[in-house]
Image (tube, rainbow, N blue to C red; front, side, top):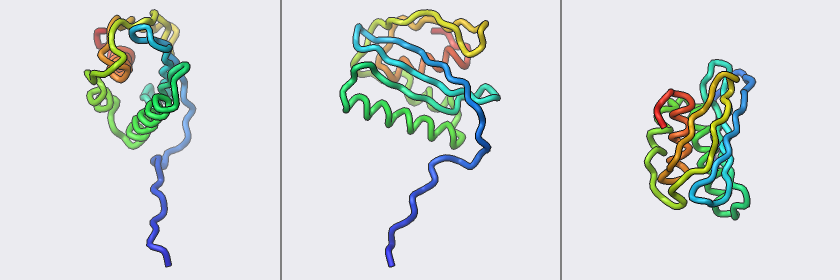
Length: 139
């Protein structure tokens, strides 16, 4: 008999709900474009996130996919979005600097998302974008 345990169930049991998706395109300090997609539930709560870089190599692609999966897992297990933001905001690594983005519409057509002019890292930018988009914080 094997001592091997069954793999853990990754997501909490909850009725499937339809998510609305919002994708935001940006680049930091002239590096490759990045795409950040957020899945929002019917109650307006963030249920899924995905971060991808255009033209990124396998290391960067793998790490960003891993961070996205861990953040999504945390959100689906009840970790507040504010806690995820607090852990990512202020992280400092390359690329850093001026951000190229533009004002764009949010999920609701009347929402206009603010421009964030500078970031300390990609994860800092994503956290600040989530904060200003979902909690009306200042950029």
